[in-house]
Length: 468
Image 1: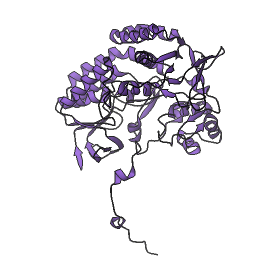
Image 2: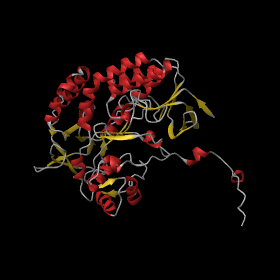
Image 3: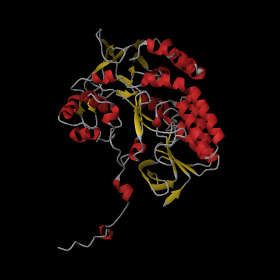
Image 4: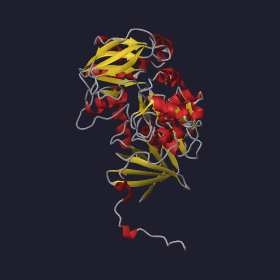
């Protein structure tokens, strides 16, 4: 049965849930869909399974958003996996799979607020059990109160390093070191923009103070060279890097640890806009490929809007503001929408500063060793990618056919940014010229039996054979 709405919102994080609540409160018929059973996204992820939560500022903000969404007239389809989105004569159709089986929704306006994926630039040993992403670690901490080891190294770049390290310290875990690719000067040059948002700056200082109070060494201008241990992490080897993130001469340090938590920023989760063939452009500062949008967040396709980190990495504060602005816009409340967009302009310098610290560093990617696995789903190494390019692959979809990169369960969400950068470097082409993988359904793996339901082969119509 098809359910019809004025607006369908994909994603119930800060951007999507705010947009859905704002538009619904203003009188629009809105449905909001999310794969998670509770709204909040990654940054305001809700506690699960009886865990009471950390009781921190993020949980309080998430609870406020969840209460607002629950009190609004918006129809919530939480715990639903979206596997197909198509254009129709009147708008967009979204197919989902939820606790009660498959459902379909249709609306003239579709808002894509699907957030981001975490980026890990491969290094020897990065697939060793005990190596997990910064975002994955925050999920364990926020949703379940679980720490992924007894003695951990936190490494990578960007503000998530301090967030996760402070969370681990609070949870009672030993943090052996925080290893930041960025030199201290990279943070100092961004200090004016950071201080322009006093509330956010104070939170960052609190995380840094918690790490310093615990006596955790912070090694700036360093990166992970390799992980040792074979079947489980036992040692993390780090060394100095240059301003572009590439290893440089200097002594290696060996840190005994049973886990490594690592992240090199975020990439946009733009699978839906890519699937619908909306226009995209490459923007390294904003997390890679982003949909092209106008001042009302509309893409190149009528009625298709994109907001939040899925439309360009800008952080939670900007995502919430974009959700509110678009919610007003979809409800026809243009004065309120314009006022909210003005607040977004004021927050842009801080957003740019944080995004710059998390942006992909091409020199770091080019330094990946030949025998290092890049696509972990299909076990494809850097050397195999280079060989495919040398054999004639000149577009990213060709590379997929040559190597199977991006054809595994994650469908390229993990490796695409690195693979495309390696290909561009090998061909001496720009990322825009190399392109991105063509979007294909299903957006998420789904059991075929759940989608097609029960049937009898006797009911399948057999066409009349063509005359001989």
